[in-house]
Amino acid sequence: MATERHGALAPLGVLGGTFDPIHTGHLRLAEEAREALGLGGVRLIPAGRPPHRGEPGSTADDRLAMARLAATGNAAFAVDDGEVRAQHKSYTVLTLERLRAELGPQQPLVLILGADAFEGLPTWHRWTELFALAHIAVANRPGYAPHGRRWPATLSPELDLACRDRRTADSAALRATPGGHVIPFDMTPLAISASLIRDLVRNGHSPRYLLPESVLDYIAAHHLYRK
Image (cartoon, rainbow, N blue to C red; front, top):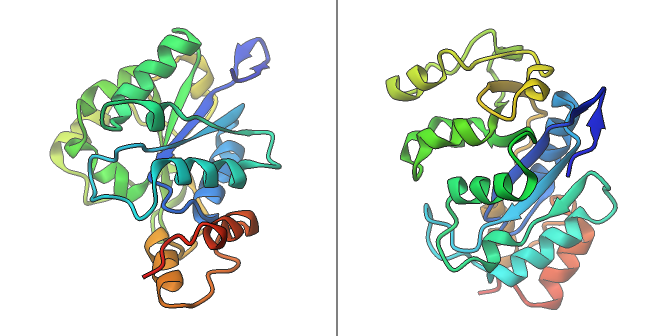
């Protein structure tokens, strides 16, 4: 559980993803969200059966192992195997319900999303229920105005309406309630993607420095992403 700060529970960040493989962009997203929003920690949650994409290039157990290697050395990061072990598809609403049951009704949870994922929220399973389960933190992509002064013009009307009374630029608000706010934060732009890494490996090129050395060694040792 997140540690207490000033008599209140520090918010716990939740960062899910296919992590196929996990890379520096994922880790910087978690770290910058932790620092910008005053999170007590971040749970990295590899998807077992991602519902919005095809079959991953590596097994769920491999992706879980790589996430654990990547998190080593950062005491603020913990890897959660709940989605990998679940028998159902990896829907975020189910994960947040599980965490809420595990951590209790008062623990602030903060779902960390990139701007693209946030804009696609209305396509997610039971998406309107996410706000009751957690706060949502949105990483600004390059070109967005900082600190929430301007929101993406591409928000759908239904998402814009759902967020209208939830927006805040004050990270202290995340400690005051268990969920319900939507807050932007600025992130260092990194042009790294898992698909780029897989393509590099598949074509015999080095992805070194795009992901942790331990993950790179795991990919080599287990012959992942080869032709």
